Length: 331
Ligand code: CP
Image 1 (cartoon, rainbow, N blue to C red):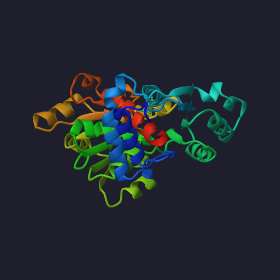
Image 2: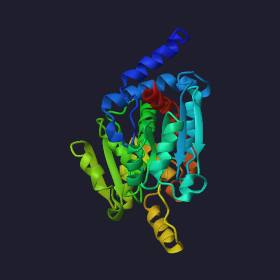
Image 3: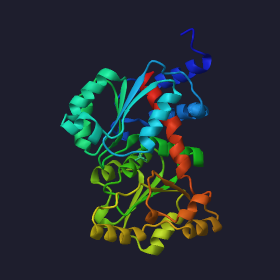
Image 4: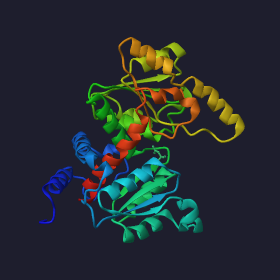
């Protein structure tokens, strides 16, 4: 340890105390409130290195294995590992350019990657298959999004964004709204994460596309409310009384007819600049988060140029947060 500076030693000691060494991360529910708080604190102390390198994991190699497209999750994990002085190997289009295209099982791919890398970040379209394959790994696996179910590291960076914006998470009023909360894996994980805090959580969706029961059940006993099929004035009022409005993104259905129906429904969940500005005139600042990517029907794009928009900063916070997580698992 003689070649490790005091600053490096401080980060390593903090990371070790979190208690995530060699753990796989498949759900936000695996974290205690204390572990999340400690991870956010570690992310804050690593944030200055977002634009540099701190050699904390120089011998560790991370493999990313993505069966679905990604800009933020894969590249921010890779940025995080590089900023920690580690190494990266990457399979960004596993369905077409890995041996999955030759019908290799995900379990076998994971077993093989375990021989090459110290940690694997996996995104897969089928949550059950991905969870089963994680069991076959001999190194930790981090979910980069499993099917429609969960996206735990997105929830961690979302909590970090709320903390950096409001300087608190307890007492925050967070609305998660979407024309489809059934498939909103980032919304599910964020709601489960906020359940660890004294936050007021409001889930807004059509009654035909509600949040899955396993998430709702986990919210029992929290400050939680579900609103379905809100009228336009009711929707505006919920938005305007929130500290944070979180859009968990939607998968627009394929096929012209389904697409048109979905777009019509989406109009009822659109966030307009007018809604946010009216709240501001009444002394209430509402911040808008989005896990991205977004489609134009979700929000008024002029919001981008206002202080309400925190979604690009949110994407940026993925780097220090994922640095903290990699360090806590690999330290
Ligand atoms: N937020 C998120 O998961 O984005 P990507 O799909 O680009 O990784």
